[in-house]
Length: 526
Image (cartoon, rainbow, N blue to C red; front, side):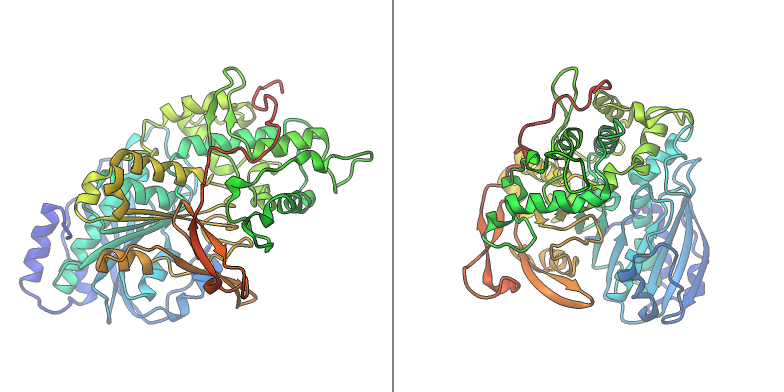
């Protein structure tokens, strides 16, 4: 099912015609590749790769156990202004015959070594890219439109094409299947791959996809500005547990199990007035201004001038312990750099405190649909047998869960029932962003189900996940397809997934969790 660019195929065909076995690693460095240069190719001994800075702890644990591999470094230049750094890792032994490309996070600017290590440890050849710039910000954008294209989608495509050619040349055969896995920006990259390059991958795993990138960035800034609109409007971090407990008191039992996890937040209704300070203001209650701030965090971003929703995304019940991400004293850096550079031309004097809901539509237009991954017509990808598996934590405090629910439902609406055999969404109750965390179970093999689906035609209908405390599993639960929830059967431990069934239930993301919608919170004079 795999294809490479014609120019690269010529190189691969020449080499594979003369070598039946895998090429030595140093031979790979001599390959000539269109619009690319190989800067190094060397064998890394088993367990010898140092853990790169910034690698999440769970992934860092993999590095001492990594098998030996041929590490190929490349620079890709699909445009005159491109400078895409890419690495391809080729297992020395026991290659499973497949390719897995790792997605990026935030504004990228570094290679996704953690994701690559995870793939290599599972037997895959793997690849990753910095997407064409250095640094986790958008300062590269002004004056460099081609670099924005590279970041938006082209770098992943060019990396994939180069990786397939290297695999074919090195092993003497193309990968039998090609996969992509990513979260946040990586989730968006998964969607853009399906939309723009349907031939690149057979299976895509998109976690917490930042599909509507500029709208989500706008939501981040509006929420922060509203939370910090006055000296008394911000909710201090010490009060988050109080707010969270009030949410649990209102909604935890709705699913039949009081376990600190809200299974279906769209059924939750929270009256923040119950936390109102009756007299003396303390950290154990909310002032009137703080109540308004709490309502805003759980309400669509509304343009005060028109009364219309500028973006329907918001945070959901269960996210309160991480409101510091968007509601802390400083605006979210990734959103600031987005608006500074894409909307305001890199103006160093631009003040993010001036951003309002009315600016979201303008920001979306400024993007030029490069970072927007909302195209719901995945016909070419699905026709060639491609599968898209999506996940999103309901308690995500950074990327609204609606980025995934809106995109998923738009695909089904656009393509009808034919899409049901090619796309699936599993929401994760009580789970935060990407690497997980939160009270909900979040540990599972995120590749196992896409592999079974692509290679054996078995679409996932129930995915068992675990919650781990101090290195020990203390709870298992099933994740259910969107439109279903996990329901306890009334007997047996509520910490054992075997005692739960996936049952149909309305999951209405148009619902409004906060009772008494906020007054005009996005008016500059509010």
